[in-house]
Length: 228
Image (tube, rainbow, N blue to C red):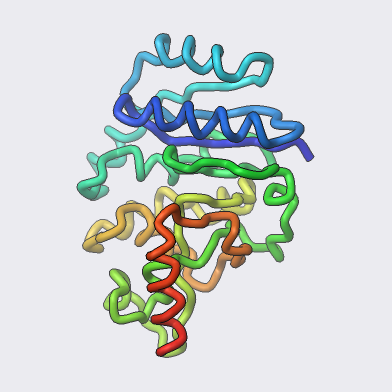
């Protein structure tokens, strides 16, 4: 399978995304295409910058401004992070590859993403890494614990790196479900909504696929899980 990458950005994190993309291109064999969901419109300047980085690798820039105006009219609450986090909900509507790897713009790739792209999702729509800071939906620091009606605790994932089965995620009407959660008070932007929508319906991936730069966070997380 040829690897497809997706980013969501605005002008503020263009540079970070280009660094991330450069690292992905350097490490990954058979990178087939790059889709960039862009919230600021008028991507001509960005296209030139992407061309310089991508070379022969095809890319597309998806202008999402009109779609976001639509969902905001329906009451979709955008958290303080801004629109870029919520562009992830548009991936099933605008990406036409069978699978895609979504990367937050601040992700640095240090190994070939082909292994991640070919990971077994067990028939589930998304693969992700359990969050280092919020391990479960019922953890004391979980932002979503008051919104879930479960007694058995379930893992909470980090949405900064996701392996997506695009057709399967499309089947669940992701954006429509997110709009339906308009009354949820988010702490971690799109991540909280993803965990509510995909509660128990995502495939855990090896933690090495989304490892934080701050190693103290890893130590704190492992200690908390051991003490629990």
